[in-house]
Length: 342
Figure 1 (cartoon, rainbow, N blue to C red):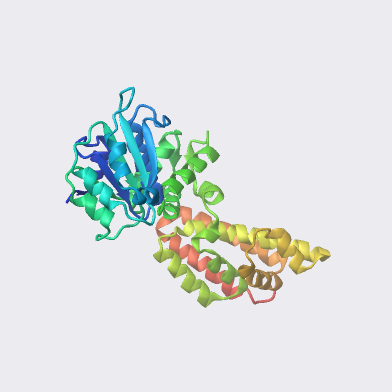
Figure 2 (cartoon, rainbow, N blue to C red):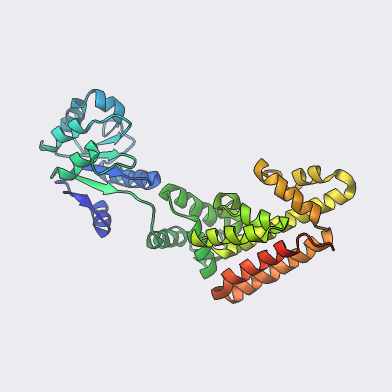
């Protein structure tokens, strides 16, 4: 069985074995599948944009004509040079064509097959794992070590450092899809260009929208006066690896928006219009809690909350080991006081 794991994958991708020209890339991380396929194509041919050097085939089309894979792989280029075939697997099986090709002497041609998650008994995966001239490489979500290396690679290319708390927060936001992670890191590097060091404020400002992290229930319930729900949602976020600094930054932004809405409502525009103005992209499912929070809070109280959250954020930076406890205490205090007058 030729199924690579761990360091074997990095070694193979750095120097692909010409004796194993058939390479199956599969798994749930589509971005990592594409990234590895791009790298293998770049090292397989002199010009990946040359349609005579790099042949692209849809897997479902290949399933209707499995012999085409053999024909393309055994074709000798008219002007010489190396060739490559890139197959994007679909819903139909073309394992028969792979099995036939695996038994032939393929020279100067690399065949890379991209697929999604495949069960161990999937015909395509079985064909590549048992063939001596093929290799199967699983592409799963990045581990913490992978993400650390990715962060260093992307930010190092822009001569940027990253503060420890910002690194922890950033790591909690990445993963799942390699290409999406790279895009976020490159966006962050562009945002922080020329600054030297990236802080947690930069992470909160550019890398994520809090709604994508499931932070909205924590923040909305805190300001609406629901401490029990805050405690439950906060525990879930911690279990998921979310950095408490991001929750604090989200709470600070929310408090500032509520303060803006309160001032607008006090000027006579009405609370619904004030919420629409201060939260232009608010999802309808959150609107009820946000309006409840606005009705319960005066501008003076919100100003005090903004100051309290700022103090808590500073304490978290001074005492990172206590960051989780400090953030939770601040949010529960907001929830406990939300329904009080004054």
